[in-house]
Image (cartoon, rainbow, N blue to C red; front, side, top):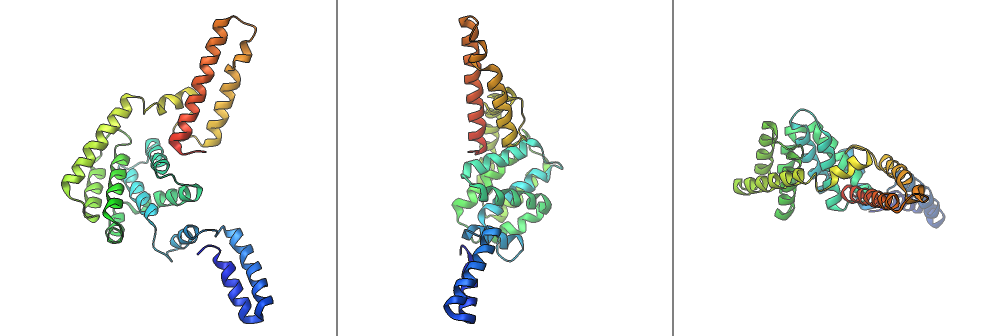
Length: 258
């Protein structure tokens, strides 16, 4: 229920002082709701789940599994962080959803193989289509750095069994993820790696820093800078600014930035 403290304050106030008390209680409760940003059922559920007072949601469990896989080889690489961002973008998460996902990812790194116990329980409450999506997402994370470590294979096998997914399906997802990873690497990460290099940033750079780098380069190479030179120089500057715009748009699109 959104704005839970508003409703609670109104009920308590009504019990103590009828309508005036309800109005005052609602006002005080709403002030706390706004401060804590309890403006949606998802937000309330997430905050309760963080404190162990409410079962974690589907997004949290998906990213717990991803976090455990990223850590299974001993160290979380920039490619794993980038893949987590890719998964968030595919899900179309808003700012709150991204917070939930990253919190789940951090939890998964701490849980490690123990995440399997929770998946077994959660899987009983989740439809097959959702469980298959989790496993596909898990394979993409495992292949994010271009290789599969033994710890990742072990965790994937246990997670698949916990979710009740057959071995043939597991292998099919693995082959698909491997083919996609190899294709992306041959294409420079579907243009993403080339776009990052063009702006002089890496996969771990935050949005504000990427935007700053983009604007700096756009200003440096803008056609107005060479307006007094020959047509070839103007054409070259125009092409450079076009490439910069496309690179920035691609990065934002793949990261889910708005």
